[in-house]
Length: 316
Image (cartoon, rainbow, N blue to C red; front, side):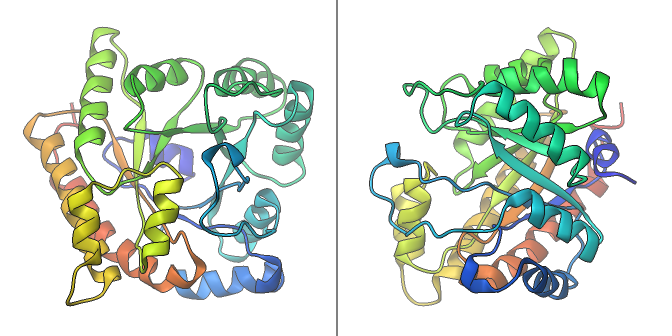
């Protein structure tokens, strides 16, 4: 079953693993892909989610140096060949003009055999970019590219803390977004509010909500926490103090927070009979957290799959 078919079946569990393309010092794309194949044999996933990294100078000084990495679509093509699993390639569309992006989209589909994209915007709505907006890129894929060339399956990023994000999700859905992945979650308050409001919007417009993949990542140091906060991830003060506490390791405590956050979201969905389909996306953030992220993926996927088995609201 193709990824798009899994995503469109609300009760079908969908689990993705997000990993950055390798740095130059990590060796060849091919050798890195083989390492990932070996490690991911420890658990089942439905897709590899590959982000595109930019400096994002507007956020201020970057806590961690941005190192040159392989191209996401080339890495994605290799992973599809070696791991035998579909890739989702992220594309930040605002930095190059519209014609450049249209050519990039066509080449990605035809030359790299990538069928799944996440369309990403700029770091700030106050900055004027030369490229298309997320909604313009989505509309091009839905109304022009897919009618003429093929069938790209497009998603977007959801930022639960952003004002009126549920309205953004609804608009992007109308423009062709078939799924969403959230920013990394360390608290359930804003994501629950966003899901609830999105469900209400869909109900009032008599449409079925798109799937939302909930993102989680382990942290192993204060540097990791600072980097996530620099990216815009919300980490409540009490949660940060818990992560820094003793005894035990920070990675163990970050797993505890992820489990608690996921359970709060799933329980809210069940108790309020919401029909927004959910998925799971786990990422490593730092390469040295790779094994911790695989362990987090295993535990969260177990909880999530049990939810998918017992839930009833998607059957109607």
